[in-house]
Amino acid sequence: MNDEEWSIQQVARIAGTTSRTLRHYDDIGLLAPSRLGYNGYRYYDRAALVRLQRILLLRELGLGLPQIADVLARETSEAEALEAHLAWLRQEQNRLARQIASVATTIRALRGEEPVMAEQMFDGFDHTQYKEEVENRWGAEAYAAGDRWWRSLSAEDKEAWQRRTADLGRDWIALAESGAAPDSPEAQELARRHVEWLSGVPGTPAASGGDAKAYVIGLGEMYVADPRFGTHYATSEGGTAGAEFVRDALRVYAEANL
Image 1 (cartoon, helix red, strand yellow):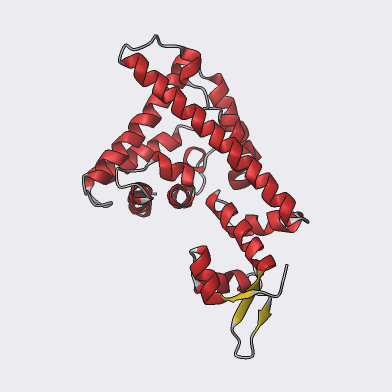
Image 2 (image 1 turned 30 degrees about the vertical axis):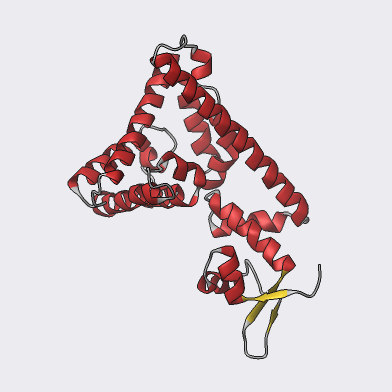
């Protein structure tokens, strides 16, 4: 470390965030500036930037600010924390690569280029890897109920669920690319289907009579913040436009119906 430091405006620009967000992080005790200038301006050193990187990485995983504060409070070494996160990213990269290969294999099989191998069709779709993430967001019982439900399904039922999920994602992308508005009848019908799909998973607030409205709106925000979902709902334009369309449509639906 050295004495180099950056103003709040410089940090906001470098990190792709806003000065307002950084001030909010300071107000709630999540990220304090390394010092205040004589004029009250906030300045950040490298240690503060490393902490900010951790915060933004955890935000991309969909964690709320209170959860992020708890995670950071438990960690004593920033380097070890980043190494753990890097390991997770590499694991996720490997899983996505396996999913890509799996889907590519299925496409070739459907085109008659090679035989269908059932065990290859679901490579990379291990739902148990999200155990800690689900428990952090919605509690251990939510994961346990969902896990029991998933394990109780037959191979045919699991395949049908995967098809339903893929159909829903494909329909979202097609509607987003059509230029429809999030509050259009078509988008709201798709949002209804989406909530119905969510309600089919035991343990989620949508299925258990919890705060379904907050749950659905929160998921919509996560679809944009989490690059895994951004990829799932990506349109031909790329970026998060598709996920943003899903988020906005779900919010309209939740506000009116949940």
